[in-house]
Length: 185
Image 1 (tube, rainbow, N blue to C red):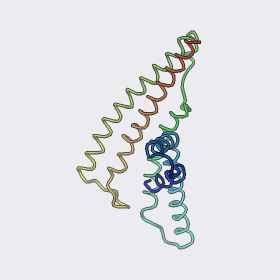
Image 2 (tube, rainbow, N blue to C red):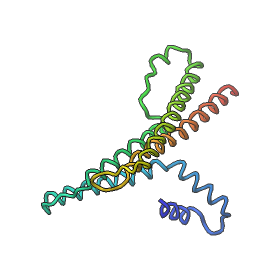
Image 3 (tube, rainbow, N blue to C red):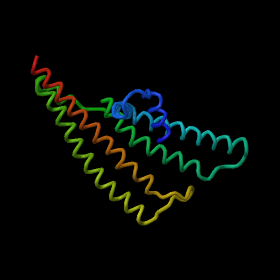
Image 4 (cartoon, rainbow, N blue to C red):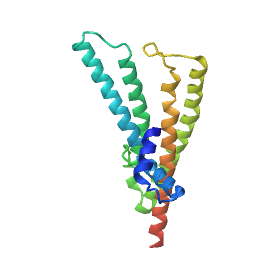
């Protein structure tokens, strides 16, 4: 990830630009694309591992002991990063039939309220899953096929939901700004 960041800095920041401005461009880029970067890397890695396993099993007649486990862990990470990506794009399934019963003016506030309720849920998940992940690290549980700590798998939940929380806060701020602009018109 550090290498990707260094490449982004070199591509987007000419030498003449001050360091502060350059950092802001990188932060903006990461804010816009962090989930996409993670999802692309994870999906590519998962596809390569599964492809290698298929090649080893059917061509070389020898199976890899770790490939299924690594692919599963990458998929788990993709799920939790994908939740944040769905929130960023506002593409999650919502039951808005009840909301449609209210006047248009109130519907905006109900959608903000739903994001705030989801934010409370995300905070609870972050706290609880962090505790579980830390316990797994402390106990030293390792996966059988790869020998890596299972804490690295469990830490996907608090990291993913931290991104969810950030995206929900951004959505709430954006919705309030939109409401404020509509009132000003």
